[in-house]
Image (tube, rainbow, N blue to C red; front, side, top):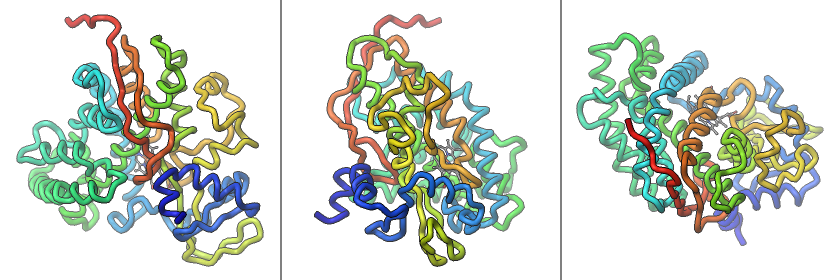
Amino acid sequence: MGYRTRLRQDPLAYIEELSRGSTAGVIRLPWGGWCVRDTELAQTLLRDPEYHRGGSTFFGELLPARSAQAELGRAVRSLLRAGVPHYRAALPEAVAALPTAGRWPDAGTRLVYRCLADVLLHPGTPGGSRALMRQAAHKGVAVRSPHMWQRARAEPVRARLVTAVTEEARRRRRQPAGEPRDMLDAVLTVCSEAEVSDRTVADLHLMMLRAIMAPLSASLAWSVLLACRHHTRAAPWPWPVEHIVHETLRYRPVPWMLGRTLPRATDLGGTVFPPGELLSVCPYLLHHDERHWNSPDAFRPERWTSNSGHGPYIPFGTGPFSCAGAAVAHTLLTESLAALADDAYLAVTGGDTRAAMSEGNVPRPFILHRTQTTRRHTT
Ligand code: HEM
């Protein structure tokens, strides 16, 4: 069976099989590049400043200056952090709007989007850009589908959104705001110094929309799926939601490979890799190394009750290019999970714990049944 089919069927089982089938510290990936399978070597590499010298692949050519990249990460993180109370307040209504039996991960994507929409583009934004962003969130632009045909179907919405946000960026540049009201203002503030076109501003806004929505939506869906499959009684979950989130990000880290193109020849464990090679670390392999974790293949939120006994944990990467939004992402996930479980029993049907491959490891569709246990009091 070809590697593409194996990847489609179960990417995590496939990378595990490649890893188990090798005694070398680094394995060649059939689609090109290398993956460091040995945990100690991977940690050495991630700590080596030389490895990161070629820069982050995250922003690509959109924003080449490292200072501007870091500034944008910080600006969006501050905005999201300030928006946490708003997100929390929006959750009960968003949860109440969910169907009693809803199809996930799509329903979770809508939930997250509904609570974040005002931070991404503020409600006073004229024109149709807010409506287009909503379509983008609902129709596979913000969170891309694992299926090519669905990605192709989302393309016209993406193009219309970029055109509308380019227009809005142009308008805002003529009438600049004071404090950033939303993520577009944050992008514009960072790009005010640099020679960045309105179109690039819109592309950066879309890039950040995806960077936020895709891993949040997939991690929330994994959390719900895994917690429900491991606790099937009609009773509240026996674990604090923070521990469910920690364990989910360990057990099913959404980022697939953290890679860097080597700027110069690099010696790793006695093998020299020439410049230009793509050398990656797979968070899933590190999180499932039995030399560092007890029963790594078991989903056990209770392992987080203690602060010790944890192996290498990199769901948000590590080093100079690690995720700018890690802490706030954790908060948004725990808030969302708490709201979903509030006065309700949750159960899933369908789906399984195999990942599908999109821009990372995403859960396959499943149905979440949510049964309210007490009537809410509204004031
Ligand atoms: C569960 C949610 C999230 C996960 C799992 C996640 C994971 C990651 C990972 C693995 C990286 C790359 C690290 C590397 O290459 O070494 C990254 C980069 C980044 N993430 Fe996140 N992320 C999440 C949510 C967010 C949010 C909410 C924001 C909003 C601020 C954000 C902003 C960024 C930025 C700006 C970078 C690029 C950092 C740089 O190159 O300077 N992420 N994220």
